[in-house]
Amino acid sequence: MAPLNEAKLKKTARLLASQHPELARVYEYNGPPPLWNRPPGFETLLQIILEQQVSLSSAKACYDKLCVRLKTVTPRKLLTLDDAEMKRIGFSRQKTAYARHLAEAVVNKAIDLDDLNGRPDGEVKSELMRHKGVGEWTSDIYLLMALLRPDVMPKGDIALHTAWHKLSGEARPTANEFLEIAERWRPYRSMAARMLWHYYLSEKVRNVKM
Image (cartoon, rainbow, N blue to C red; front, side, top):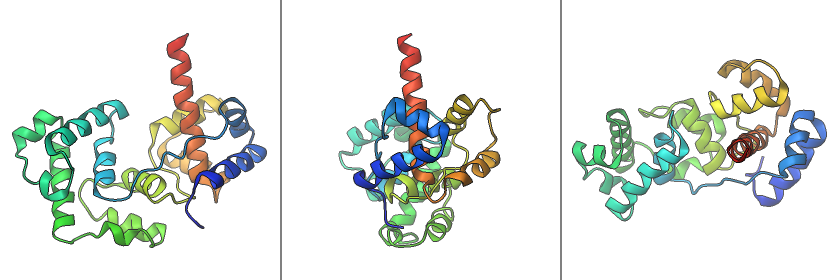
């Protein structure tokens, strides 16, 4: 299937809402979600690594400091930073190792991120996951947001599990259980994920205002 775009996003959101009651509630309240697209490449993959198991705001703060320090974030420039500089910017020891490994892989041509654009989802995941710090969630998010693949459900995304729990009234699913639940949204799982994220974020905003 062709990558998602704004027109397809709106059409697919309406389609899912017409077929699935829980998503119909999300669509009725929020309308279609944002595309949340990101440019493919090193910078985006690095940002997704920073977002692992932390809030988006803290990951963004760290990346913004990196941008201030380097002006332009490239693999070669990142490799000029020592451990102390990386720590001051906000990288943990583990994510410093992940970032360096990715930068070295790009510089040494152990991975060609541009080459991933036209390859099947499974091949992209396998190629990304060969590298330290890139697991299923990270590769799924890259497929969904950077390559705009239409049928990806990120494994282990707590926000998605929470949104489904609140919408359905069911127990909060495990990562594997939620992938089974998501089978009902094929071949538009990326759209369902966006709708659930939209719901999750809107509920957070609503609760703050109450």
